[in-house]
Image (cartoon, rainbow, N blue to C red):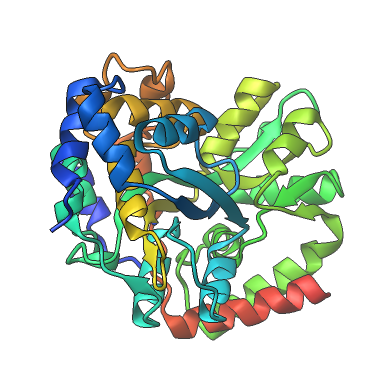
Length: 372
């Protein structure tokens, strides 16, 4: 990324002594995924026992990565999934304990840290991260001191549609939402208030992050009028619904849009009016029972080969230095604009920087919408 993109990422936003650290760094760096020596591997496996309890978005890890992590560390992974950042927040706030690793979006890091639901990242345990992370993904506004999080992925929010199911070729939010009424019951929405409300606000000419009561009331009215035309509210399986033809399209994230493009006759679009770019993160929730395994996971996936495997599966941009990914098994992802969008496109997007007060207004609208 360029220095100009660096300045874009730096806009304010509210949006994801350890004895084995040296051995793990040498293990990954020397092996590139291969064993770095039987003695070293045995020591690593002995020091990293037990289970990693991983709370994540569904389908957000290459299945191969789980097996490789367990093979290298001896740590098993037990998975649990959330449908939105707000579900993650609610579960941790309600007292859920035992998760070792979670993946909220950047704005939620600020919220979780303020609510004392996270424990600090120990960067002495992340030698591979320190070596390979693009500096532009450190000290981002939601975590200036790099105290609570490490970047996981980044991307955009837009919409996707099946080119063989509809005749139109929408390029704007207004065209997209008009199609939801024309093809009633055939388009999905994310089950997430920030993206849906923010996108409608953008369509209306407001900021993605508007906290104006009058503007949000207009968004509310539009959203309530749309309710009867929505196929489903779904953040987990909507891409499969669209790719299979059960739905004709939906509002969603770029990685899922590319999935639809590769599995069917589909297209992903970042709306001309603008919208959102986001950064997802790794965090360690308060009460984690195996934080060593969590640090080991974060360091493991920053190995360029593993990062490329992740990128080729999720189709989201990696925070690993791009030159490190060249020649790795990222297939066409590295040259796909929807995975690594252009500077011109990113400049037209906003990061989520809604305040807690604004979030409460939006959640009231969302609750009313879902109950209507």
